[in-house]
Image 1 (cartoon, rainbow, N blue to C red):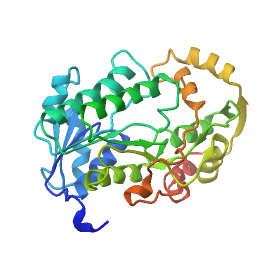
Image 2 (image 1 turned 30 degrees about the vertical axis):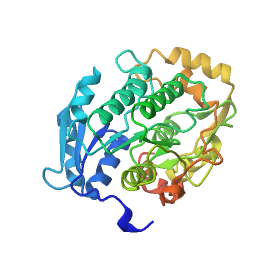
Image 3 (image 1 turned 180 degrees about the vertical axis):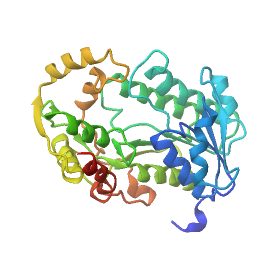
Image 4 (image 1 turned 120 degrees about the horizontal axis):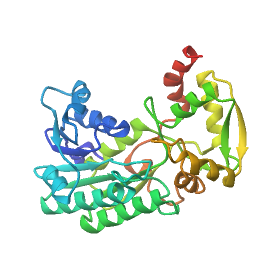
Length: 315
């Protein structure tokens, strides 16, 4: 596509919900690099200070928000040219339930986008939410449906499990491998994933804001490799230098353990996550992908050595 047909983000006001998180911070950095003026919606304005290193003075500002009502989010959207939502939670809790975060938030943001004439809304969902029967997936799918209903131009990105220097996926298992005699292969470790680099997801968001043909479309974002859990563990062991055994854990045993672990503030695994694992997390045949927005996904082997090397020094 000719460069002239791309939307210039310079000095555009882009509001980002979830901009201080693992994925959100990368998105903000990419937007600032593209010249956008970024408003980061947050409960804690001080939390955005670290983002200022990515842009010029005054290019990124905090927008205080309590996230309690539709009006709270509408007030944050007002005055925006474009909006990005990358808020998500892994655990269903009373103060941050799946229904509230994954369904209500995109619903309210989309309504505000229509009300205030926003030109673009990019919503980050998750891969296989249209297939999985987990509460996480059901709430995500409901959010997608309402966003499209309220703002038909919504662009939805569905990434597979996301990896990167500050991830809570590869790093979690690398840390566990240091202290446990073995790592579990739930259900025999046959679940398949298509891990995607956080930098690619962030760049896909910028592409979705700049390209004229992506509105109202759903894109499935997966890396170049389809891997099962055993293969992912093998990469972790290879690049971290940590040696650990693996053991197959039947689903029913995993569910019993998850039940008792659920009392922890941040459980290592939940029954709902086990339900998610029973559906392959891969790009579906015929889906729109990175290729359709002019991108090529980064292989894991190009990224993992750079941040898993830290575990060599922690042994």
